[in-house]
Amino acid sequence: MKTKSLLSICLICSSIILFSCGGSSPVEPDLPDTPELPTPEINADTVEVSVKSAIHIDSEPLSTRSSINDLYAIQVWQKVPTTNDIGYSWTECFTYAHGYFDDLSKAVIKLAKRYKYGITIAYIPNGKNLLHQYPDGVYGAPCYNAFGENGALNELVYGDGFALMHIDSGGTQVKGIDDYKIQSNGWSPIERYQGVVVDFDPNTESTINIKLYRMMIGFKLNISDFNSGVVTIRGMLGHKYNAYPDGNGNGILDIVIETDMMPTAANILGAYEKQMYGEYDLEYYTNLMLHNGTTQVHISYTNEEGETIELYRNMYFEYARNTKYKLSFSLSDAIRNGGIAAEVVEDEEMGEEEFPL
Image (cartoon, rainbow, N blue to C red; front, side, top):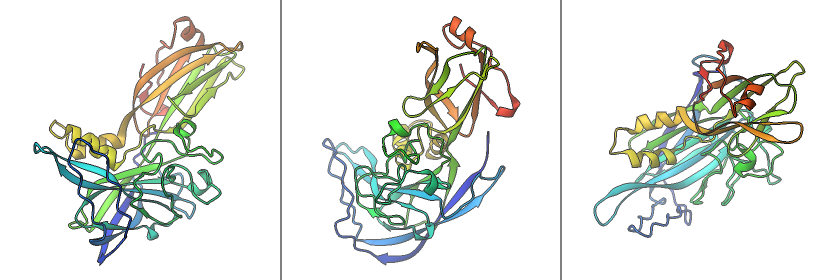
C-alpha cells in the first residue's frame, strides 16, 4: 500500500491592494500571564493570494482525478510574535480565515503584509458525494466550523476565531452521519490528502508549493481457527470494524482508514516551538508529522454468548502513513495465551510493514 503519490498546491501572490475588513479582526487568545498581543491590522496593506492546483504523480495514479465533486478545506493561521517581561520571545498562532471550496480559482486569500502565516489544506476527492451535507448546504468535517461561522461554498470567512472541525484530526464526516464530533467520525474510510505551509511571508514570497500527502493507514488481519463469534479492531474513538468466520475456520479483515491526527500549520509550529532549542529543525519536524504518527489500536474477540476478550491493545501504535500493517494469528492460541502472541507471517502482497507487537 505504500505510495509516493502526491499533489502540489501552488499559492501565487498577485497584485497588492488596500483592503478594509472592518470588524473581522481575529479574536485575541487569552494569555493572562503575558503581555497583550498586538492587534493585527488586517486593514493595512494586503496581498491577494490565489490558490491553484497541479497534480504530480510519482508512482501509482490517484484513485480519483480532480473533478467538480472534489472538496478543499482551507484554514489560515496568523503568526503574531510576542515577548514577555523577562525577554522570552515566542510566536502565537491563531485562526485568521477559513473556508471550503470546490473551485480553487475562487480561493483568494487577503493577507495583511505585516505578519507571516501558516496555511493548511485538506483535499477530499469526490467529497461532495462522500461527506455529509447539512440542509443549509454546509458540508461536514473537515469542512465544518461547529462553533463559528461556516460561510458558503467558495467563500472565505475572516476573523471568526475558530478553526474548521477535524482539519487537525482524521474525523471525516461520512454521508448520513449528522454528528460532527470525532466520536462518530474517527477512523473514517474516506480518502483524504493534506498538506501545510508553516512560514508564508506575503512580503517576500510570490509562489509557494504545498504538497498534499495521502492521509491513510491500513490493517489486514488473517485469522485462523476462527469458527464463531466476531473479531473487532478499533481505535480510541469512532468506527470499529469486524471480521467474521468464513465457514472454513478462517477470517480476514482488510481495511484502509484515515489517520487519527492530521498535520496542520498550527500544531507543527506549536510542537516546533517546544523543540526549537533542541536537535529538531522546522523542516525535519514538518516532515515527521506529515509521514508518521501514533494511534490507538484495540483488537478483541466476542463469542456467541456476548463475552468479550481483549486480544491486543496498543495505546501508542506507531505507524507510517500509506502503510498497511498485517498480522496473522490463531484465534484459539490468542485466547489461550491471553492475547496475540503468534508469529507474524509475511505477505508480500500487503506491503512492507509487519504489525508491531
